[in-house]
Image 1 (spheres, rainbow, N blue to C red):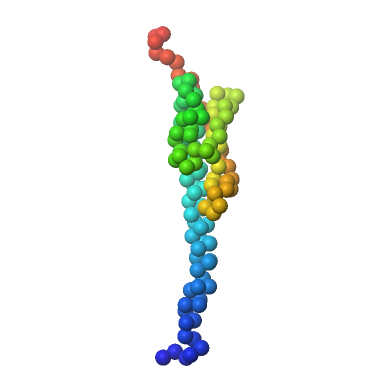
Image 2: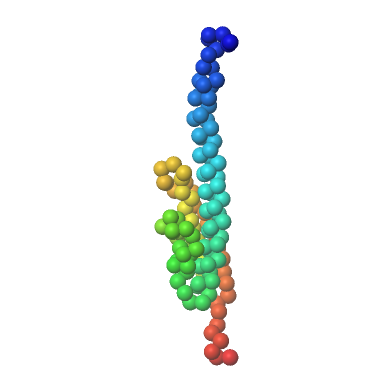
Length: 117
C-alpha cells in the first residue's frame, strides 16, 4: 500500500495536465483548419477562373466550391490580367473569429463559343 501522502497523486497530476492536453488538441485542430483553408482557397480560385473564362459569375462559383459554413468568408476580385484572386478567411477554433486570410490566384484563357467555327 502506498504511503498516505502519495494517495491521489496520479489524479492530481492528470488534472493538472488536462489544460495542456486540451490546448495542444485545439492547436492541432487549428492547424488542420488552416491547411483546409489553404486547400479550399486554391480550389475556389480555379472554380472562379473557370467561371470567368466562360462568362459566368466567379464569386458564385468560388462560394459554391467551399463548404457552406465558410462561404461568407470568401472574397473574389478580378485582377488586371484576366485572372481572379480569391481570399478566404481562416476561422478560429475558439470564438469563431477570423485568424488570417489566405489568398490564391488562377487564370483560364477566355473560352470562345464554338458556334462561329
